[in-house]
Image (cartoon, rainbow, N blue to C red):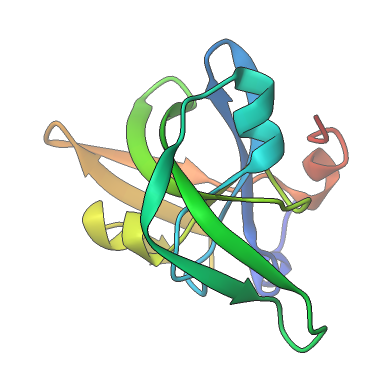
Length: 143
């Protein structure tokens, strides 16, 4: 049985489907952008547009900067009851294929339950609860 504090230090990690394939995703309230990996965009051959305000992204203090110059409109599903479309910045990242940040959370009025590590969203007047994968499930989530 999973203890409540097992979620204390876990990120919200899950899987989503794009087209008919399964990809890894993270919901991160600390990210100021929605992001799709260049690997995902290339694999699916998705059309990108030029970013209206290109910027450089620096990861902590390692000195490496990523140039963010393109965006992609991405349609995805989480489980059977949640379908969405989101505009994402396209960058090279290995942590996941799709990262939903503060813009997605704000626009969807997503409510995070930190103890359960779930997000609740209202879609078409119905509540949808998104649940994170357990650490044991993450080992199988590599795609």
